[in-house]
Length: 76
Image (cartoon, rainbow, N blue to C red):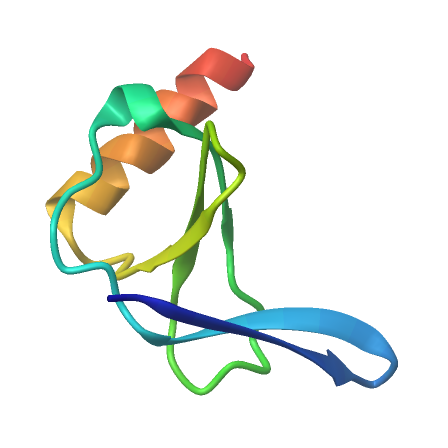
């Protein structure tokens, strides 16, 4: 279970993670990702799936880093 929360910080919407996705998400399901803001209490990566679901992931996990690397390559 991963929990994301959007809130207004200084008038700007911010999404923060309070728990992380425990199991790796197949790479074919993830279409984009973004890193949570510095105003969040813990680091997080939001993985966006083909069905537009946003899942919080731990940026220290190797499978999350692999998603970020793959998406960066696809972007170039």
